[in-house]
Image 1 (tube, rainbow, N blue to C red):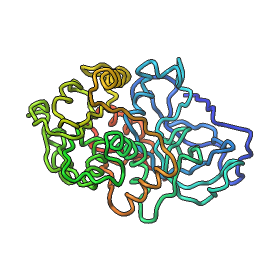
Image 2 (tube, rainbow, N blue to C red):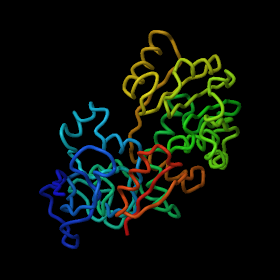
Image 3 (cartoon, rainbow, N blue to C red):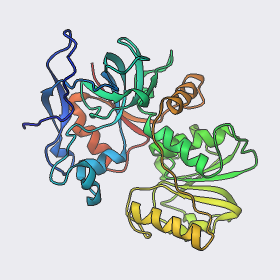
Image 4 (spheres, rainbow, N blue to C red):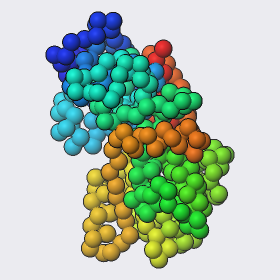
Length: 347
């Protein structure tokens, strides 16, 4: 498979670096079988980029949508007929090996984690200098990579629902649907750290895992209906989208809020329709729905790194696979049955 890369620039390459690298990439939209190991040119950092030698990369449902090119509206930004960036993955942890001309606060040898803009399923990846943070001492690269998008989304989602970092949630009740996924598993830990009572919704096979993360109660959705729960929740985080938003709203306390956060199609439509409906209901019907946008930044990632270092957060990891099995890792995420995060390591 011949794949070109649009991440090369005129910035001189560090002489010690190879001219090419191995990556897991695809030249057409589809399922995980479109991904394969390929050799592509080494990317060079732009003025505000750093080049990272990748130690670990983690996958998210967002990577599956980009792999499939669905919903199709995504293709307006990422490539109409084929992906503009052929390497999948964005969560990354590793060591800086080169920096762009305008980067002064990172240097070769710094161990960092954050968001890779050129794809992280590769031996090397580019990242914007303001979208990475220093990897704290004692934190494994696999844990850091697994905590980028999912932990930030959990943090920002809870903040949008009124549980900002540092807030005292003692006495509040939080319902987390999709609790054994990446975002859900971090949301449990953050809500518990704030003092909330957490009810986790997942399949029975994952019940012990979410209890170990701190969940006070577990609902097995294969045996119980979420809509039969008491109407006493102060925050409902829905990472699945299988229950109508209005039915979830009926489970809230008089001041409780619902946070729809799923990319899957459901009774309220797909992800974009769900967000639109939530905003319309909030503005016109005074329903207590909240939406949010989560983007990485150095300060936000530093908070996540500190939480990993002091034990406030610990990623739930489904499995760790080597780079050459990147397609298998993506298939596991695409199945929707991964327990927590799937991580790929590069040696």
